[in-house]
Image 1: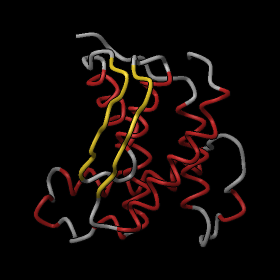
Image 2: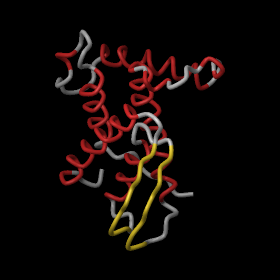
Image 3: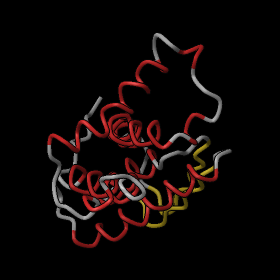
Length: 163
């Protein structure tokens, strides 16, 4: 199986996205436009990663209903699980044959994981001229996160290199 390389622009884009979406209404609100990630930024987001990891493994039975309504859990997922799972999507798309048009239905779409992986893949000339992506999720807040990530990716795409 071929591998999809991690695009160099993912790090800065995800960092900006995390700060803009999760720092407002916190004591770190003024950090939302600061470039790069510091050790303090990592500490802020890693607590959500730790909780998500526990819920996805040893504490599976304790996973709260509508857990993505909790900002800390959404931010933890976006910080760690989003890039890992987006890379899986991009790698999976390597097997999609060249087509003029492709439609994708993403059920359980938060936080736009498939969008990040898919748009990364197709921005490298993934062999599709027209792409239609439909996101479905039972949680409106989650879909808002996906739309925000989508918009940030689209702002970035015209200036991307192949890295």
